Amino acid sequence: MVVETDELQSKLEEKGELILAVSEFDDPLEMHLHDTEITDGTVRIQLTDGVLTFDTDEVVAVWHHTHSLADFGLED
Image (cartoon, rainbow, N blue to C red; front, side, top):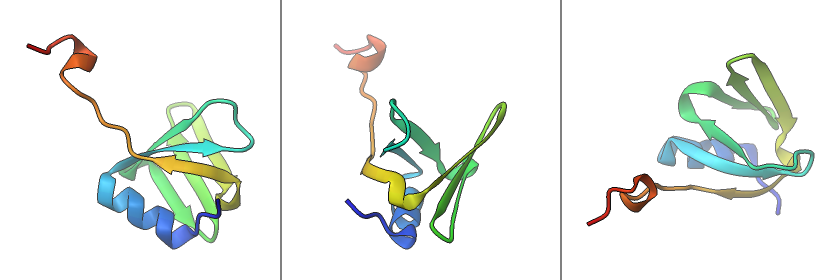
């Protein structure tokens, strides 16, 4: 999967948050519109204790996750 910088930025702006699988990390990453900068093929996510930076060509999957009432034990 090849993710273009513009495509990733558009998806993030549309959804507000995305989950990414990145080849160099074992666990998926969550990025939000308010803490992520995507420029020139690079993603920078501002974390509470630093900045995580990786190239968009390392992204192997992108998806939007949602939550339900059941996720919080609030279903009828």
